[in-house]
Amino acid sequence: MPAETRTTGRSPARRFGWRPDRLQGIRFRLGLAMAAALLPIFILSLIQTQADFRQQAEARRVELQLAAERSSASTKARLDSTQVLLRALSPAALGPYCTPRLSALVDDLEGYEGLYRVSPTGQAVCASGRDEGFRSGVAPAGQSGWFERLRAGEDMVVMRAPVDSDYPPALIVAIRAERPMGRFDGAMAAVIPLTTLQPDTRDPALPQGSETALTDGAGRLLTASDASAFQLSGGGDVAGWVERARNDGAAVFEARDSRGQRRDYAGAALAGGDLYVLISAPSPGLLSWARLNPIGALLLPLGAWLTAFAAVMLLSERLFIRWLDYLERVAAIYAKGRFSVRPIQAMNAPSEIRVMARTLDEMAEAITVRDRSLTDSLAEKDALMREIHHRVKNNLQIISSLLSMQQRAVADASAKAALGDTRQRIS
Image (tube, rainbow, N blue to C red; front, side, top):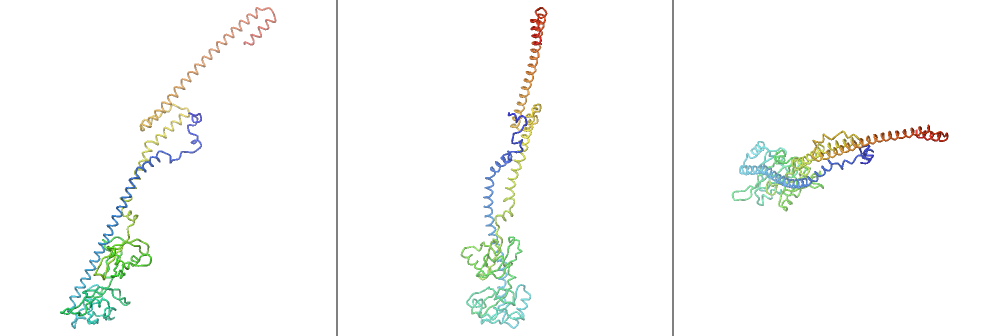
């Protein structure tokens, strides 16, 4: 181990305040590995989510078409009942009391603006009493399109009444009247306000945000619960959708409204080719579908990923990180020269951590034994040095004594002085 590491217990980078990037840690790498392992599951989940979205979007369009057909059936029943009423009134609409009779029916029956008996020349010979007069297009009706169609042989005609500022928008429902030999004998007509025929948007079977409308045979808008839903982006409207539906073979189409919202449209016929019901509902985009299906589309995959990530973080902390921190603290104590501390707590750690702790313990034991051996060797060397010093001192003392004896035995003064000088040097 380098000297500077032994004295500080930390690497130079740690001593200067820099710590390894956490992105290189065990937990991050385990989390990255877990994310990579879950990647195929996320891909399959996205594929399944897209498939489910397409399937439910198609099912939703089918439901919208069925809702349009249900709405058209209820409205068509109203038109059929009007046709039955007109046929029942046709023979009795020529008597002297036909006007009060038709007026009483309009007052008693809900949803009728007026009832009329029209002659073969287009004149109203009997009508429900109205002080303001006849609605435009009903009488005289000699040049009206619906009257000409009845004269040409059609049994029933449904068409929008001409726009009249004195009256609300309405439909003219007319049937052909015939004499016993089949000769054209005029028509029976009823005027029905469009508001009474429009499907109810409060129907719980309709998708949320649905709007309803009635169109004529050319696809032109007659009435709508919200006209902006049937105004398409670019300033146009849904005119012509009937023709497009015939060409495409389906009465369901998708478009953007004037507000830029993508919507689904579904239509159904009410009375032959004269009147259609059209229903519009917001298209469920992928994100909105995910909001409608949060568990399968979002929460379940996200919950699985978060659970796996939390498990990685918690288990890595519980199983590895805290034990590595513990061993790092023990190693720092060893670096300061204190080998009495042993990693006993690591005996409860995983086997790999226990192996590392056992290795640190064996290293500390080996260093302790080595230090004890070195200390004993130094003590023995010190004792030997003291013994050698003592013996040398004794030998020099003997030599000094011998020189002292020789000095006393010498009579020559110069020799005696040389022996004394030598003895002094030895001392």
